[in-house]
Amino acid sequence: MSRIALKLNGNKLALDALAKLNTNRQHHKLFSTNSQSGRLAGKVALITGAASGIGKAAAIRFIENGAKVLLADVQDHLGKSIAKDLGPNATYIHSNVTNEQEISSAVDHAVAQYGRLDVMYNNVGIIGEFQPTILDLELEGFDRTMKVNVHSTVAGIKHASRVMIPRQAGSIICTASTTAILGGMANHDYAVSKAAVIGLVKSTAAELNQHGIRVNCISPHALPTPLAVNFFKKRLGIDDEKMVVEMIHNMWEFNGARCEAADVAEAAVFLASDDAKYISGHNLVVDAGFTCFKRLNFSP
Ligand SMILES: NC(=O)c1ccc[n+]([C@@H]2O[C@H](COP(=O)([O-])OP(=O)(O)OC[C@H]3O[C@@H](n4cnc5c(N)ncnc54)[C@H](O)[C@@H]3O)[C@@H](O)[C@H]2O)c1
Image (tube, rainbow, N blue to C red; front, top):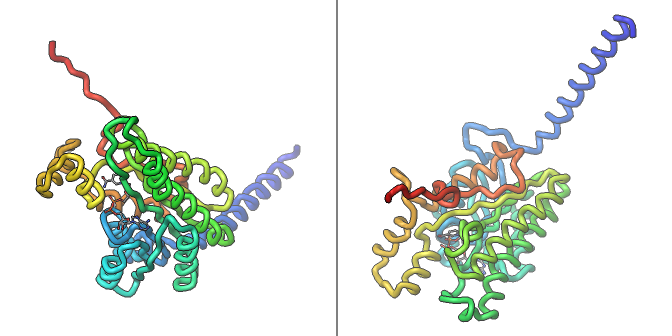
């Protein structure tokens, strides 16, 4: 090839690269850019289980970061009052996540009210009844836990995808748990349900990638929300709430920090934001390393 032909060829490659860059830039208009008003400025999010614990903390952080949030729960009084406190960018909707129709309606409500859905946070979970051994496991209870923790997450991903696929963009976040990673930390039904959530996230992320939809989950370690506090109060027969809260905090030590709902909410803000635009199929573990290592004992 002559020098001139090489140069022309080089110019063509450069022009092609520029055209591709411009197409990408146009495509990225679908994502809101980070503005000074917050990492989720202009985004619309639906959070399930938002009347308490992690979901409530996430609703607060999402709003602080500029999102419009539809809070879904079955605790209507609590949910409405939280939404009222959060101001005009928050709305509450009753949605029992064990009912596919109610999840579907909540998704449609977000689109009707705010014009689209950017973030679906499938956060509801129950812990189930304490079963000391596998022999105590009642399969009806197992099914109940799977229905609330897994069935609802499948339905949440399905209906969020229904409205996100046409826009070719979206972030779906689900709540798993460290109990899905290490055995022996929870009831079998709870641990299995959370392991299923991690599997579901990988499976659906594989399909939804082609539509520009990211699917991730967060695995928090134990933290003293009503779910955990009530479970341990009952399981240990301790009435003193402060003592149980302290006990949960002491389940793992990290100098200078304790696991709080706000830490999980921060992880959710990140996954919901465009800062995480190339992260999908991931399980973001919020446990200060609890599931990463064991310390060697060097004593004789
Ligand atoms: N707290 C922990 O130690 C911990 C650790 C790891 C994972 N998680 C997970 O975090 C998620 C949130 O739990 P949390 O600790 O904030 O608990 P929480 O009990 O404080 O909040 C759960 C919320 O879900 C709502 N809810 C329950 N069933 C529902 C249903 N069928 N439909 C709609 N809403 C329903 C409840 O009303 C409540 O407001 C759950 O998936 C839980 O499994 C919690």
